[in-house]
Image (cartoon, rainbow over all chains, first blue to last red; front, side, top):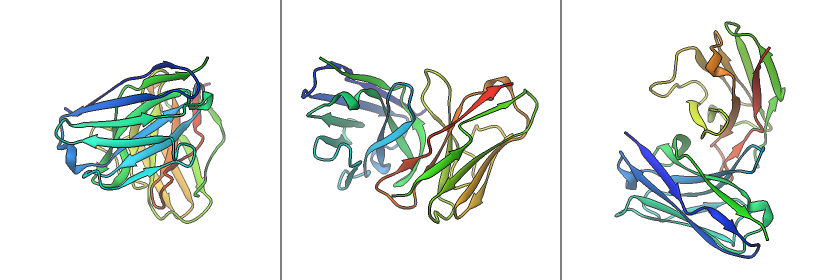
Length: 120
Length: 108
């Protein structure tokens, strides 16, 4: 059974940093791109970042480019999202999700989400 | 950037009725469109990928169609658990991956 478990969310002040983790199980982790998607309170889904299976390529939304960094440790089946210079508008539930096939970014499994609140 | 427009924002149906949801792209995206369902407090769930393919475990009452710029998600006979928010998403040209703004399916 595929499982994705996010952690690391919480309350942080503007300008602060957080690192989110997503531990995966139930599939060959290194064979699939992984993606972070966020959802601000009461709003729709926003793609944040994707990393390929081997970790060699990363992609970012313009809204987070230069502030967020996605990485993965295939030996631990875990993907990370390092978030720096956080802003109030980064407040959201952050989901990690698995690509349905290699780098085919339809997202067939999602974690339960972790809430990030940026506020003073 | 590819923009996906879902209209209307809210649809009202009764259980047992047939529902059709729309997603329109501002440029040709072939068949590279997915549909997700999201219930309150839950993560999204993939219903349809590549316009018309259902992942294992998705009920047959959900079907997708379309290509190019116009896409449709059809729920043939609404069950009480189908009342939720539905999002479309394209993957042909990325980054960025883009989602529609969502359609809320509510009980009439």
